[in-house]
Length: 260
Image (cartoon, rainbow, N blue to C red; front, top):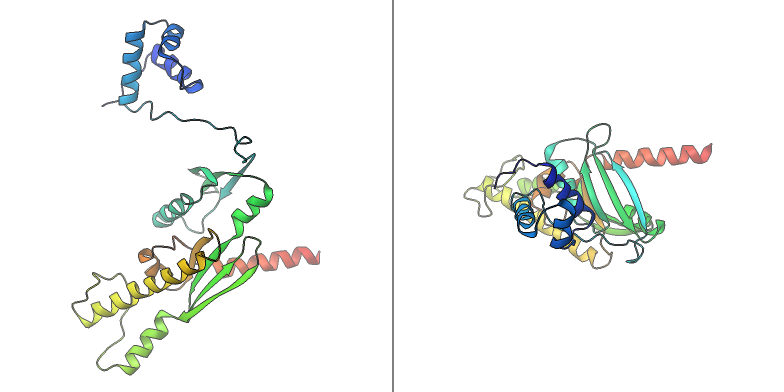
């Protein structure tokens, strides 16, 4: 239904319903100076056209044990569309984030985070599992308190591909990329499927086991071939190509502040 032209009565109805979405029809009609039937007709048109998208309940944060609101601005390393979509998908998994807005200017996102206390906000920031696609695949777990817990190590894609080429007959090097299907119809297609889908499945299996030991961590990946495998992962939503360098920078900055 197309959005209707809004007159002064429609705007007054909207203002009243914004203040009290459960206002009775009789009270609403009385406040806008209409009888019940025409008032109801206007409300139904506003609902069907999408001007009134939905009715919600606004909770008392203290009453539900979440008295602290933290407003966070986020800047991504790059503003590519796929990274913005991946970030939004990741944020949607975190119940602490009640609002998330894409912004223009020096920052990319504005978040409203609700937590029981500031200590809980610190935990919200830090607990994570990082999958590093290097010579080997290193999966590192960091606790909510920022403590490195350990992880898992497996062979990397490139070194595994090199071993296959060196030891198997008539297999030549290929550039790993998106497989056309799980069932490869040629040696090249079969290798693409086995490596990309296979490593994605291996990582998902390890991450799911780690999640049994580390409650609700942030899941992200870094390294050269992360962007090849992560789109087919069911657990990793975020890729940060600069994670290691940013980590070194933060260590340097903290040490510099400590020295001062």
